[in-house]
Amino acid sequence: MRQSVLFFIFFAISYIGGGVGMLPLYGHSYQGATNLSDSLDLFRDITDIRNQVKRSVNQDTPDPPTVVPQAISQPIDTNRFEVQKTKTRPVIYLPPVNPLDSIYSRKPNGTLLLPPVLYNSESMRGLTFRDTLFYDPLFLPMIFTGEMLPRDLSFYPPKDTASLGFLIPQEKTFAPQLRHLDFVKSVRRQYYIDHPDQMKYSVAYFDSIPPIIRDAEVKESFNPLRELIKPQSTFSLDAPNIEGVQIGRKYWVFSGDHSLQFSQYFFSENWYKGGTNYVNIFNKHILKADYAKDKVKFNNSLEWRLSLSTAPDDTLRNYRIGDDMIRYYGNLGIDAFLKKWSYSMNTEIKSQLFNNYPVNKNDLISALLAPLYVNAGIGMRYELNKSFQSVRHRQLNLTIDLAPISVNYKLIANDKVDIARYGIPEGKNSLLELGSTITSNFKFKYNQYITWTSRFKYFTSYENVLAEFENTLDMKLSNYFSTSVYLYLRFDDGVPPNEKYKYLQINQSLTFGLNYKW
Image (cartoon, rainbow, N blue to C red; front, side):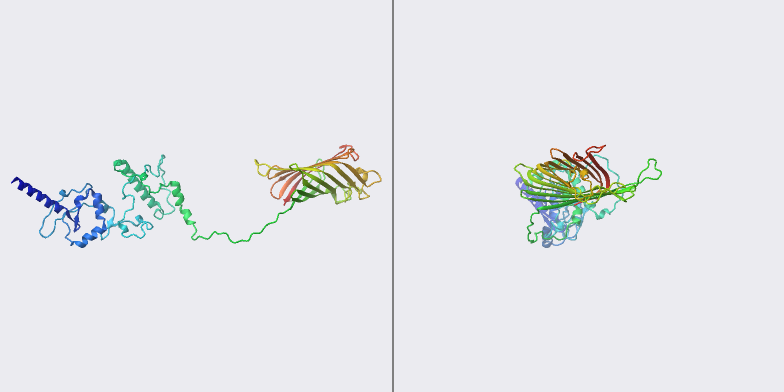
């Protein structure tokens, strides 16, 4: 008897278990519900379109259920639902309400209708039923990424920007997507904090996951301004087929320096000290031609100075010539065995172009080829060219010509000129002297605007001495305007001395005007 009762109970449990194993779902036989461990598995089975289609084909559509469903989040307990047995309809067990139904609506076929913003056409290209695939991080399995701090973390109080307004409506920018992304990250971050025991996976254990990109790289990669200026089409950058041309070396180098400067003085008739009104014009032109090939160097310089001024005190002439000089200087050298030294031969020729008279007199002081100075010598040259790295445009150029054997020749080609003024003996119009000469040219460019140029010459016949020292300080105000200070000192003991200056001669000027170099 006891064995019969146990067999009856076992048979009843088996019958009930088999009945529970066949759960109708939305009018379809749902098999395997007792094997579902939680509501997530139930959700996956519901959204499996393939199984749902198979069930709808194999079964008839039943009447709608009569039991009101209840939303639960715990594993399904089949004993909670009432079993309604009828003769015409099968037993119906309704599943719990899906929480996603309160967020998204469904299509007639039962699939979720997600917003278009959640679809990524590039990653979903070629797939079907894309509306049933969830790639939003809000619905994907939780994987720990290590991002525990919010993107806009700040220790300062938030600024009130509501009153500022927006130039572009927020709906037409990336603001909605950014807000949705921040919301997803905040939900996942809160889940990390509330359920750390549920974190079974981490990005550190997945080799196929690309490394986390830094914010700076993301901003640079997705810069909208770069996308706007990105070219629509690309062109080949292959080098065109151009025939090469061999450029020959240039041995001659030409340069020039031109100045036109002036000064003006005005005094009223009642000026307490008196004075003379006059206008002075000064022009200077320097042309250079330098040749260099292998060890041979040939430097040439041609200079012309002319200073004219009005002469209100001169009753014979309306103008006065202050400075009139034309000078050529050449140096031919061959590099020596010492660095910066060369064997050289230099020549200097100097004269003037116009006649020069004293005030209110017709006595000719100087004229063309009266006097004419020629100096030539053989020796060595030292040359230094230096650029300073500490200061831009600062340069130093120095040349020293040493001629232990040199010739100095003076000629007065005009009989009206007083030859005694130039140290030539009576009855002669020329003088030839042998001796030694030292010539130095110095140029120091302090910066782009200030340049000091100096020239020094010393000749001795071992009886008389002739020394010249010229200095010019140029101060550029712009590319075409400059101010110059000129000082010319000359010592010659071969001429009669002056009562005041003896053998020293001085020429000084301060001018302002145009300047051009090439």
